[in-house]
Each structure stands twice: as structure tokens, then as C-alpha cells.
Image (cartoon, rainbow, N blue to C red; front, side, top):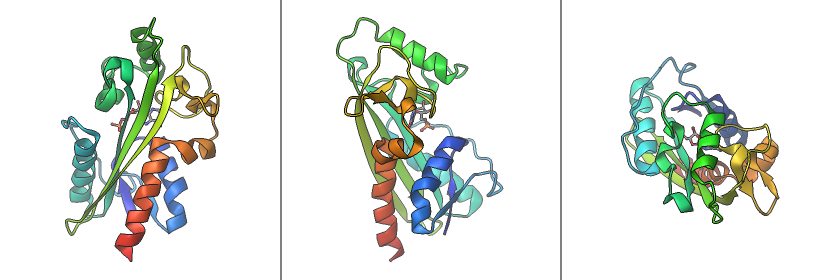
Length: 195
Ligand code: IMP
């Protein structure tokens, strides 16, 4: 079965295929499905934005579409950047600049608890919708560490492993990450749905 990923993020595509290929599911990009959908993420929750993206790509492609809406929620910033993680500090910033801005906004904060959240939504052309959520708790490091991954990976520290997400291999990250957990939950729902 083929699912179109409602995202331009190539790293998300790889992470999804790593996890869902075991089910005989292939996740392809919008480009491979011949669509290029610009979705305005107007929702205020991960659930709303995830549904907006999956529905728009399903409607444009006529194929089942899967979306991940994810972000980093920091306790001492009242859950920010949250659903605005990709746009934190404005559209023009690089991942590195966003990490630096986050550290700047947390300067002097001793309470550094945070979590990554991912909500996966899959919309089928017959109107059916499957949703799954995953969370990964951690803390925000005092300085970026590591080179792997993307986004806020260099500043997201996992106390149990004593490393940031950017210091983990793809396999190690998938095993504990918000997206890994959401995809595992989604995989179970999809297995049940497909019978
Ligand atoms: P989305 O593509 O609208 O869901 O935006 C998600 C944003 O949250 C990304 O652009 C990253 O900034 C951040 N994010 C989500 N998942 C991860 C992750 O696994 N590592 C690092 N940053 C992430």
C-alpha cells in the first residue's frame, strides 16, 4: 500500500519509511505522487494541523495521505514553541538559528523540562481517518550538541541516554522519539484497519 506524505521534509520521509516499511507500506513524497500542496497550518493543536495537511494532500492526489504535525513544547516557555516550532522566530531562520534563539529565550532558566510531540493522521479517499499521538520527554541542553537529525535535535537532551537527539543514530532516535512512538501506535491502528 502506498501513502503520500504531506510534507516537504525529506528526513521525515526517511524516518516514516524506516518504521512503516515493515508493514509493507511505502510512503512516497508529494513530488512522487505528482502533487505540490501548500497547506496553511491555521490550527492551534497538533491534531488540527495534522488533519489539515493529510486531508489536503489526499484530496489533491486521490491517494491515502499521511501527515505528521510535530513540535517541541518547553515547560518554562508555557509550551512554546509548540505548534509554531517550524516558524519559531520567523520563517527565514535556519534550524541552527532557531536552536540558538530557543537557548537565548531560556537563558538563566534552571527548569529545562520539555517534550517533543507528534500527531500522525492518515486520510483515506473514502473519508476514513486514522490518528495516533506520540510524546518523548527530555530537557533542553545548555548548548547544541551533535550533528545528526534536524530541527531542534542538537538541543533536545535525553537524560536516560545522556545524549541529545543529534547524538543518536537514526535507529536509536526512532526507538524513543515522539514520531517513532506515534508511528508505532499508527502502525497498530493501520494493521487493524487493513484487517
Ligand atoms: P511541522 O513540519 O509543521 O510538523 O513542523 C515540525 C517542526 O518541529 C520542525 O520543523 C522542527 O523544527 C520541529 N521538530 C519536529 N520533530 C522534530 C524532531 O524529531 N527533531 C527536531 N525537531 C523536530
